[in-house]
Length: 269
Ligand code: C2E
Ligand code: MG
Ligand code: MG
Ligand code: MG
Image (cartoon, rainbow, N blue to C red):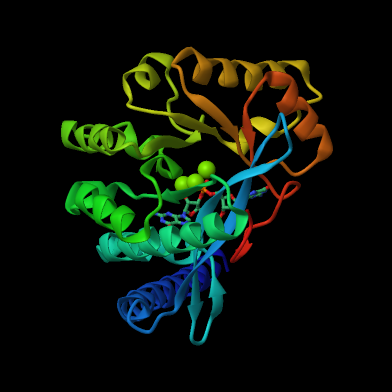
């Protein structure tokens, strides 16, 4: 009996596995057409200055309106896009579209506000990213100070001298560099101190169980670390008033999260 159960389980596994492989291949093929079919869009989530409560900028977050599967989030398709080597082209579109939107907000709001874009390591390794940024900025009329490029801590950690050089070149242009998802990788202070960085985005993992004094002490020290390297702190993923109060008590400058504003298409600033 145990033998036949094992066999059944094996059959189920291979069938699931087979389907997953087919899904991934189909998704990659669809992704290849998504740019020309204009199926990508950006949602924007406001970033709040905690001292004033004002929305001072927004993060651009990629969405894909799939013809059959509906609106997809990055987790559903970024791995396939990375695997298919598509992030250079997709990322270039994100950059241009984010700056187009930012230019519009600046007209309507008549004040300074920044836009942040997530960049994958692939764009910095294979692409001509700095040149693209220079061109996109010139085309949009948005000042370089108002563009923030976010790179995930775990992607910048094993990075080559060339990736670090490009981040420095971006800063020389006046663009700000943010380390994203800080605290999910190795997060050493000595490593952070070597990175060319203006902003540090503290991962929402730091917001769990803040009633526990040890957890709130860890959040405080993460904010302290960003300050120690001269960076400005953004705390991500604030969902409750309690979390927001705790974050404000740390002295962090910026905050972002569902409590303060959900990602949505179009105008947020
Ligand atoms: P991220 O850069 O850390 O972006 C923040 C993510 O947290 C977003 O998920 C956002 O919707 C979500 N979020 C914001 N506030 C809250 C909150 O209060 N609670 C919770 N639970 N989540 C919150 P999203 O849009 O699904 O994006 C996931 C990740 O995909 C992003 O994480 C980013 O690393 C990546 N991504 C998004 N757009 C792009 C892009 O244009 N290019 C690249 N390379 N990566 C992107
Ligand atoms: Mg981000
Ligand atoms: Mg990110
Ligand atoms: Mg993040």
